[in-house]
Length: 83
Image 1 (cartoon, rainbow, N blue to C red):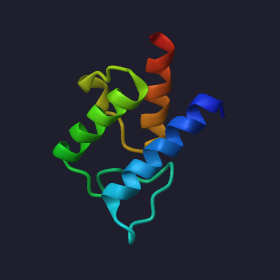
Image 2: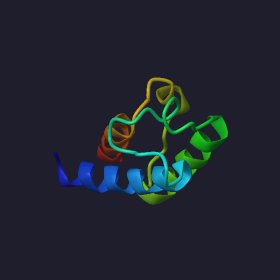
Image 3: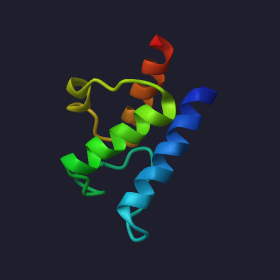
Image 4: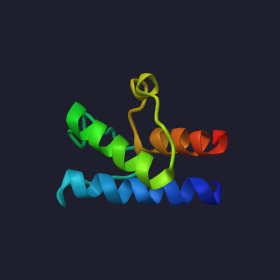
């Protein structure tokens, strides 16, 4: 894994853990909706934080296929590469 990916996924996991609560285990393959229980408001809030932290614009249409922190980190890293 690249350094950019590792930095991104670590940031995402910390952010998601703060939303999930201590009783919910979160790793790179945790389902954000089914296991963490994120709803659309949580997701949009997280996207705003991601955009601020990584200086990217996350296209909403690409979020539909994102289910895990791994997928989200890969998207963010690819968007950083475009910038």
